[in-house]
Length: 91
Image (cartoon, rainbow, N blue to C red; front, side):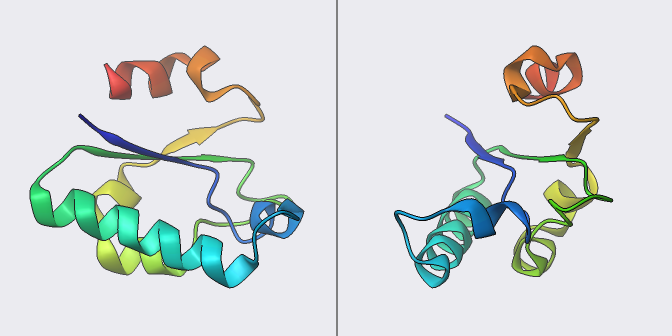
């Protein structure tokens, strides 16, 4: 089992329309804490952090500093699984 949190970035969260932003952030925190507290692998991935998508939620840096620093930064690859470094991190 592993927890994969893909594109939980400040800008991408703004695209969500079916779930309130606060709820997404609350659920993201809970998933990250669960992974850390149970020792489950946690893989974080972002796309284009220096563009509109922005950085990962600051909460993830605080909750899971190692996973945050080891996050997979995709250079605009939409499908994370198609980006080999992400796929290798998951495998």
